[in-house]
Image (cartoon, rainbow, N blue to C red; front, side, top):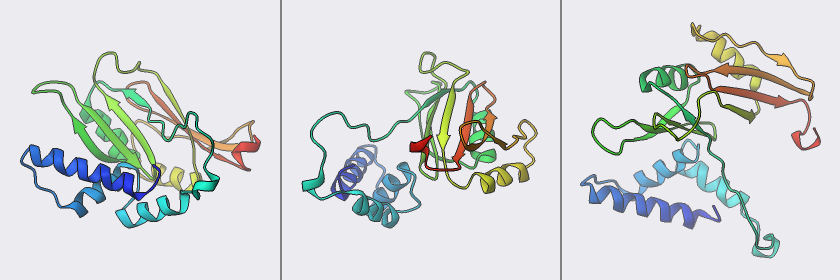
Amino acid sequence: MRDSRDAKSMAKALRAAMAERKIELSHSETLEIVARQFGYDDWNIFAAEIASAVPPASMVAPAGPQFNQVIPILRIFDIAKAMEFYRDFLGFTVDWEHRFGEGMPPYTQVSRAGMLLHLSEHHGDASPGSTVFVWMRGIEAFHRELLGKKYGYSRPGLEKTDYDARMFQVPDPFGNRIRFNEADRDPAQL
């Protein structure tokens, strides 16, 4: 995302697409939706983050590949079980769900605090048993939050790693794992 004009263009395109489906949304509503898709609570926070992250044109790196965001796709087999785990236990928000037609399997985006995951029941989208490695801040509070939910299928233990970090891992009901990590020092130095 180069600047807020890109996000506003996304909101404009979303508004037009929804209008074609006879769903009327205001421009401000679509700005809020775009902000949530990028993991922010509202447009004002997102716009401020974009403004602070955009370097002056003179400091822009030379042309070449730039990877702005990576979104893992995890294979699921039951959307209700997935929601129990990702929404109710881990505290993710369901951003959207897509189905190609009546009776077709869902493809869903969930997010929390800037982390995006795509969950798919579509055969061939991903293999069950994947692992997602996450660097984060606030791991101890997050760990306490999860243990406080008394989720019957996962009671992760927080452990010290041999790469100078603290980590806990949670398996979802489909064999996928998320490894949450917080470095004891700058991860770039590990």
